[in-house]
Image 1 (cartoon, helix red, strand yellow):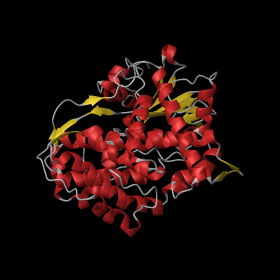
Image 2 (cartoon, one colour; image 1 turned 135 degrees about the vertical axis):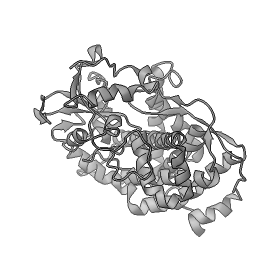
Image 3 (cartoon, rainbow, N blue to C red; image 1 turned 45 degrees about the vertical axis):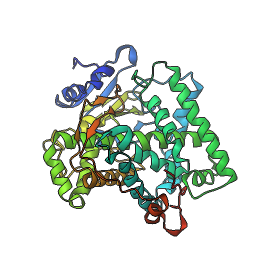
Image 4 (cartoon, rainbow, N blue to C red; image 1 turned 90 degrees about the vertical axis):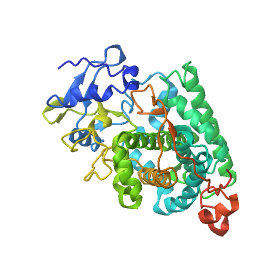
Length: 436
């Protein structure tokens, strides 16, 4: 069945028309349809229902992340750079290689490591709000939602906080490659990638000489199948950490705040008792935002998916954003409901080996940010136009001006504030950064 839909129309995604576009596929039985992408590629199966997406995502032996990569766009198989990224980044590995790498990387996301980070980030959240609270206005993305994930990354890998702006700019360039606000020359994407990789090499050199209690040292000292991670393999992990740890959480927080603006009764409910609602609130924020719109898989064998015959070699694209609005799985999916339960969303992936490794960290950051906003900026409101990213991969918000009643900063001295976050040692157990 043909649909009058162009899934390569970046402008339509920026205008937020993709929900209606994808609903045509989802609400037409059997909910799995072949899409002819013309000169963009060989065409692909569109997966939009929650149950179908989970079935695909949980069978890596049938639907490969590595064979064709995880992006809708076709890889340049003649490009050595593209091939290296496809083979070296954990997101695009299949078991058993993926299993071994994930086991190593997960050492940086243990409950102990996350607990060490929590006190530090609570302190940083107050400092982030301190910077804007007395003004009464802020640009929500750059001044609020982006700051906590960036500072978490800086602390985890032990880099100076002042370098977080570099990560922000590099990842924006890579994710926003089809948005003229970020990129006006295709070479800028390669330049941003090169800058990030050079920074990664500098970190590696520093940690090999001076090991620390951080993810970098953990990975550089770990073995995979009897051999240490290569420089290229570490570069790929650093790329994934910067993009996934920054862009996704930032956009979840931003979309979540927009959800509260659109459903103000939910904000009044939440701020009346954050502790009561915060667990279900976090899941609803992630469902509502679904910052990664889609991921691709490649069929490694013939497969019957709910009566649809998928052939070996077929390209399959899972649309998480459509599955998280599936009325078969969610009652009133277009309502932002912070008490929604059950809430079996796929914002962190649909289960299987690629379930988001940083999900607990992301939940913690979302919980912290909204808790402090509710306490210190309770009457926050939209104060201008919301500007969306021009992308069919990341559901991003570039700009969202907000206003609120000015409040007094909680800022004291850096050492006073450090006491609650790091104790007498002056470190968090990661990089120990306390500078503003």
